[in-house]
Image (cartoon, rainbow, N blue to C red; front, side, top):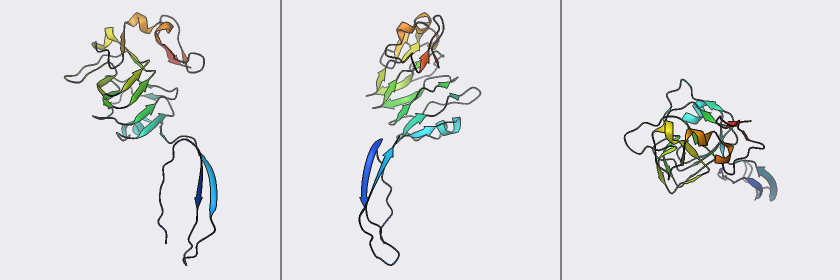
Length: 185
């Protein structure tokens, strides 16, 4: 008997050619099947989903996640995976989003909370190694942080101006009322 194999495919359209062996050892003719992988990422919809992510997985938010009343701890010591906000937000947490980020990408995020820690603290990421942090900002007034290689420090006033958020999608994803922080549509 053949062995069952699980194969991961990236997003896109794929064609697989295979044969099947029945219980008495007779092989079928070759068969081709075409399928589409919409996302090779695991969807995070709840606080529990977020708490249970692995440190090397690829994830996409499928819902807003509110951490009010939760004892939230940043995502692991070293996060090698990816987390795509997909137009959703994680809100009401104290501290940075990721304790340590290695060879990852963080895009279009902002933080306005106070960050407190003894070592490896930052506006968005505690320690960043080879991580691209793009169009992401933190409040240098309220955070108590001043690092610039782990998110761009901005004043409270700057974070309440649309012009601060370069390349953010204010047509479909984000909205902002001047004098307030951005919010999802």
